Length: 297
Image 1 (cartoon, rainbow, N blue to C red):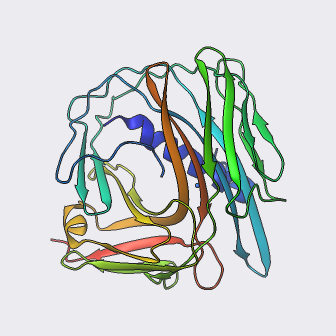
Image 2: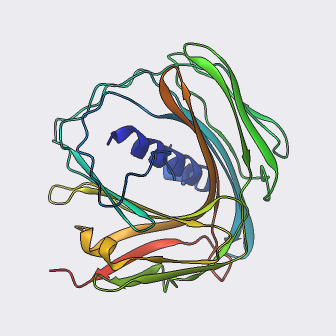
């Protein structure tokens, strides 16, 4: 399991947060890793990378006003050095893929930025383009005055090529849904390690509803990233007890979004395209907070 897909998810999340809170200093599934067979594990050590482009368009209540956030971000690199062997383990429990990683304190992963030329998102309210900067990294687009989409639009990500070949990928824009279960009280909810947890939402969208649970690596605990994927049109799902019992920490950050994604191979490496919209709580605010696990040994 490469660290890169996790970094891609984190970078997208941080870009969205920075646009919402410019003073925070930060630079919010979604990686496009294929899910392994149930019960399978991946010890890591492969020398490949996943490149990608992601866009977000969300609107939600913030205090007494309505906030809007639109983001377009891309991370493109050449093949990377491998991770330390056995750094990460991935298991599948029902609709959820759980990754835990213990990186040595001196671990590093060499990534060489590369360009595929200007990357354009078409089909949105207005076309948006981000350009490669000196050294190959990409500028980030963020806008808090308009939405890129409201749901159902036909989106196309494309680039003409540069250091790496170009690409074109079409997606249908996801729509906003409201999560009714689990309910967050003052930003927190609880789950029992011995019980399933029901997930329910109103509204429908193309693609999937992604509930992501995460915790950073500390001196005593591993990095944890669990992605639970449900058909966005289904309006309900279940997180199995087996997932909770496999998570080695007591509290996790929870975020929920609707997503459409696709992947293709560019220059021998997976290249993913992702469009996502933040899910809402019943009061119209963003659905994000903490899950505290009961039954911790």
